[in-house]
Length: 138
Image 1 (cartoon, helix red, strand yellow):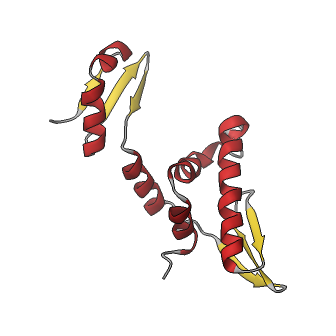
Image 2: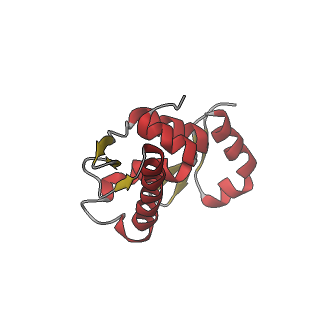
C-alpha cells in the first residue's frame, strides 16, 4: 500500500479502514474537503515527533525551600515543596492550558502558534509529559 488520498468525505468514509490502516503504518493518508486537505496520523507517531522537535525549555529552579518550574513564553508555571510535586503541578497546569486553548485561545494571536504544544500535551500521558519536561527519570 502506498499513500492514500480521498477527494471527498464520502469517499473517505467508504474507505475508512484503508485510511486508518495507512495512518497507523506511517503512510501518508489524506482527505480533501472543499479546498482543504486533512492528514491522518497515528497519535503515537505524532506525539513522538512533536516531543522530538519541540524541546520543553522548562526552567526548573530550587528556591525558598521549594521548587518552581516555568516555560519561557508560555503562561504556565508551577511550584511545589519538592521537585516531584512541582512536576505534578506543571503537568496539571499544562493540561489546563491545553483545555483553555481548545476552548477559547486557539484564535488569539498570542496563543495561535501553540498548536503543537497543545497537541503534544493532549496526546501525552503524565509520564510522557514528565519526561518531556525534565528528561527520562531514573
